[in-house]
Amino acid sequence: MLNLGWRFDYQILTPGLRRFVRSARLPRQPRFSQHAPLIVDYDWTLTI
Image (cartoon, rainbow, N blue to C red; front, side, top):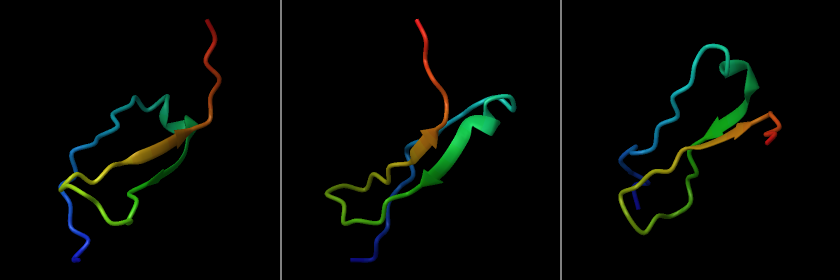
């Protein structure tokens, strides 16, 4: 397996939200499709 994928996932945010990004990664485990997921971890608390 060549570990190739199309990058369909995007995260778009404002400069003010950039400071809340803790990490971002593209997992390299074998895929069942051409989809390459983007995982972004944020450091914030949602309140209702």
